[in-house]
Figure 1 (spheres, helix red, strand yellow):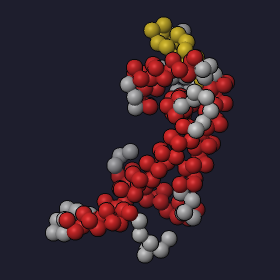
Figure 2 (cartoon, rainbow, N blue to C red):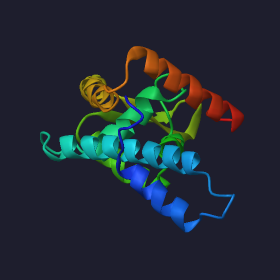
Figure 3 (cartoon, one colour):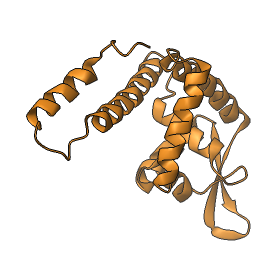
Figure 4 (tube, rainbow, N blue to C red):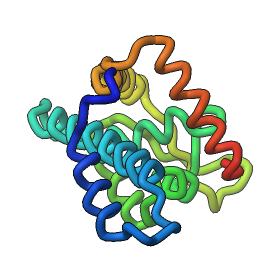
Length: 171
């Protein structure tokens, strides 16, 4: 992409640069990069939400996100509700509500852990795995559409730079 092409973030940064003309702490390139990353993530979140809004039946974006954390979590094929709540960044009460919906829909099962009867284990059903598999690929297509302006080489460069930042932050 040419350097002469501008977007709304350029206007945002220019306003702040004019406001903080004599402030050395303001870094226009940092502001521009962070605002653009946030806007990109918002675009993807809105695209996902819109797709689920016009989707079939009662399967919601929250249902998908709950299945997703179950399917990609680090435990073999099961997780506790508390582990899922932490992975999904929701309260345990919210996770219980989500799991109730998924269990009613036949997408997950709850079982008492044979090794510790105080623990409940959540497992995806075959139907839950199918549902997740369908929506994960639709989401991947939206993600790829969001980044299609970049060549494969540019995507590699972007990943290299973002990885460098995350490693420096200890992530």
